[in-house]
Length: 270
Ligand SMILES: NC(=O)c1ccc[n+]([C@@H]2O[C@H](COP(=O)([O-])OP(=O)(O)OC[C@H]3O[C@@H](n4cnc5c(N)ncnc54)[C@H](O)[C@@H]3O)[C@@H](O)[C@H]2O)c1
Image 1 (cartoon, protein in one colour):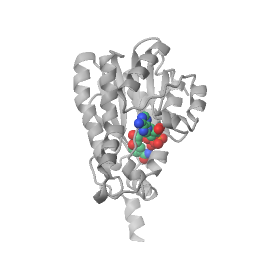
Image 2 (cartoon, helix red, strand yellow):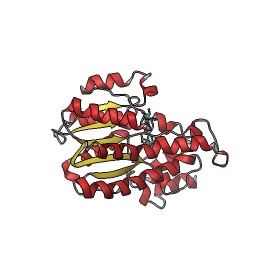
Image 3 (cartoon, protein in one colour):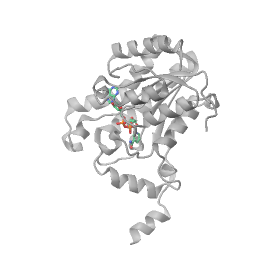
Image 4 (tube, helix red, strand yellow):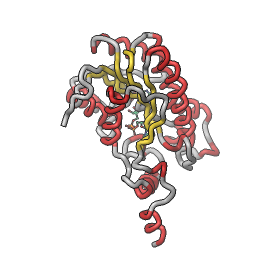
């Protein structure tokens, strides 16, 4: 049921790859709530062609951009303003990729060129998006910018390898840029730390099913789904959260505050 929470708001949604993507679910929800946006992804991801379905169902245009390239971002942000007719009110950065994880490299045998690529794609790109928006003065006052993080920024997970550093950096960029952009334009910048979610990026981590099940047992509310995350993002884009900035917001069913749960004790006692 729509409450038109985002009526009149314009933005950009990065990272919808297929119908499982958190960005995909968010685009559907933002559309339902009256927001308008452009969709973007890396040119290589467009080859799957899936994003065209999403564009059709949300009445939005697609502008390819590699989020690590400043020229692509400049083009994307300029064109988005032309298409949508003015400055933007929200941006979702839903981007993550580690070549080391993709190639199954253990943490003691990192390829450092790929390590830098992980940081560039999954964290530095967030700074590039913010800096390009600021230089183009593309965001309205009280605009809301969100990136997606994971609790491996604070805790060690054996198979999350260099993505753990990328997420720590991403959360740090949200604080530093949030401080700068808040002062100059009242723009808010936050990260949402999401439960394990069954998507292409999620399933790429080895042992994913085990830590998905573990997190489910450790979270009093269970794991937050991609749809739940989309709902939270809509609230963060809305005027109801105008004073929230520079935060890493836990969206994990209570996982991060649980020591152990009865469910896990029961499972381990078997
Ligand atoms: N799935 C999970 O368990 C989980 C949990 C917490 C946080 N997250 C984060 O959520 C975000 C979205 O991931 P998802 O789970 O929806 O998976 P996904 O695979 O659907 O999305 C990742 C997206 O990043 C895009 N991307 C990769 N390189 C890019 C580049 N150079 N330029 C632009 N886009 C690029 C991909 O094309 C893809 O659309 C990521 O930041 C991920 O780390 C995921």
